[in-house]
Image (cartoon, rainbow, N blue to C red; front, side, top):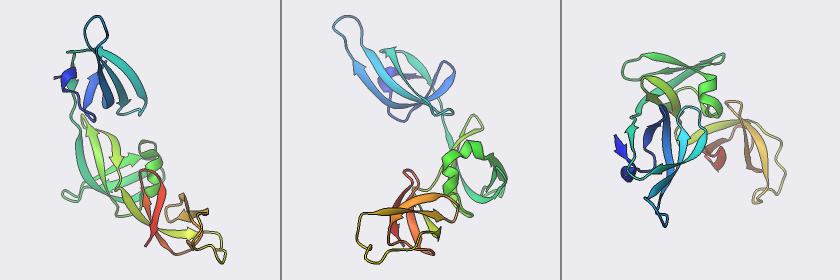
Length: 185
């Protein structure tokens, strides 16, 4: 159990038997009465965000997430196959669980799979990933130093906005958290 006085950003707690992650909290002492805690919570499975207020000193069950490294093997229809590099056990995760992160999964990428009570709730990709540009519009001469951008298609089929000087066959580094171009490799 954890008290409101022990809250930290990132803690996973059970609120009404649902798993929530603490995003932000603030102690508030009104003129009359006891202190209250204002808190912003993100549902661990549904990803929805709610704002709640609790009395100071309330207790909550703290939940532990288990993170395991897995290697992405291949995509089969709407299913993604991963393998544990230690046990060679393979697991299948549906595309709906992975969501937008699927556009950065290429073969042999190592990811972190997050479990809550032996149920997969999310995956963490590497912060940056290198991808090959497979389709882009022709470059325009003289556009090597401008701030203009264009959209290219990378090897996983995703579209990324990049500077005009990027061409077919270039390897680019992308931030997987923001889907933004970082640099050409």
